[in-house]
Image 1: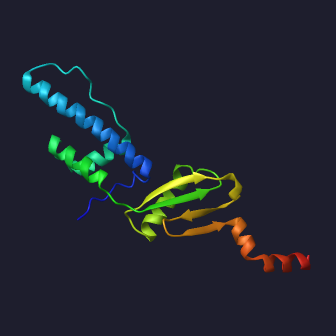
Image 2: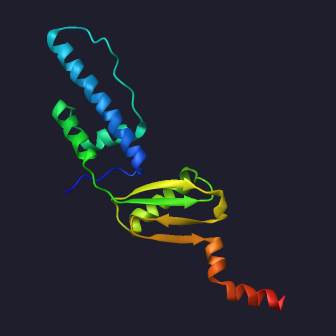
Image 3: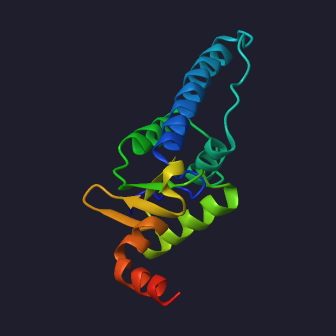
Length: 159
């Protein structure tokens, strides 16, 4: 079974940041083990990392203690994830609740293994544009109006 990325890590940028955090932690962990083995005091404090990184590490370890091998395996797994990406363009960047709603909908209605990037374009007015590697889905208000030109003209004539 393939590794399933936690929902907290939803974008390629977040995934990249998590991998960087874990690599930094791995370097520190290796050095700390060597220093402990030779009886030297650690000169560098344990690096801090994001909440998303914490979730990934905890889910990966599943309650077990971390080892150099398990952390290396996690880094390799994360680097080799081949997840489809979708780009969502909105008139403004979504807040946390909106972002979670969009991500949940996409993962529940397409595939749970999906990375989502958000882009803002004030010219959209409203709605969203969804771009996959193969297609573009335009659900903007402007596009809806353009698709219903005849209906809009008929309404305006009756006014």
